[in-house]
Image 1: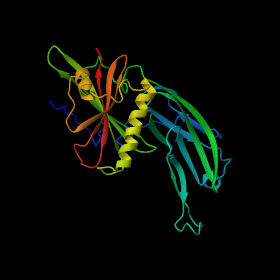
Image 2 (image 1 turned 45 degrees about the vertical axis):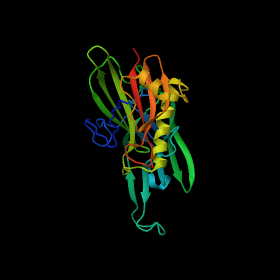
Image 3 (image 1 turned 180 degrees about the vertical axis):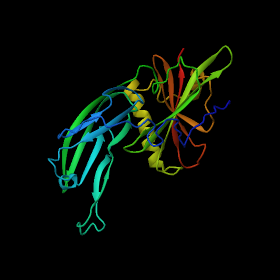
Image 4 (image 1 turned 135 degrees about the vertical axis):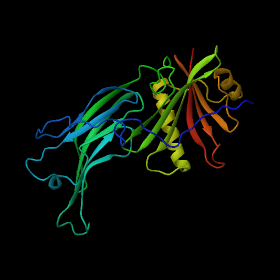
Length: 282
């Protein structure tokens, strides 16, 4: 059996001007209104487009730490919240003296899947939670498979980071095949910014869920899920063939693409890694 050679990145690189978030920093979007406000650079975006956020809270001239113990940013569908303001003390059991304040005035979030997302600015005080402001972000995909343009034959590798849970999605594309029968292909793999590889199986399964759910949102249920001759189906559909250490989880046939969710044990006998492999349809 011919082997399908994939590069499944576990590290990521970003060739942008902001080494932390992947886009260039900008000035705050809002003015100095004395209101609770969550602001964004855009509310209509495409898949994997990075959105810049900022905020303002009504203080009526009081120190922010007198009003809130912390302020967070949340996105629907993600359990974690990004803490944009917090206070701390040298001795948590004796909160007197000079409290330390930590604040993010501008941050960025990348939306990986299509759909409408509710983003919130949330204030916490003495264990009480209050939504200060909310914005709906609408995400579309004008192309296919994580916004890959199949007509662009340039080899590319891009990484995208969700700053809330530090999930990293790396997408690379290239042209494969002979001079006559050549197609654009792409892979999508995941990692975490602050976690050391190899990840735990639970972390691999969380990554699988992100990849799978992104495809479900975009294309619905898979075309093939449990076929007796899964390998031959894959080899008939794709120019590159399945590696003997990989298994096929499911396959989508879309208007523009053929996409397979694959699991691999090439790097471990006990843990499964997951990634997506896609090819232009025509």
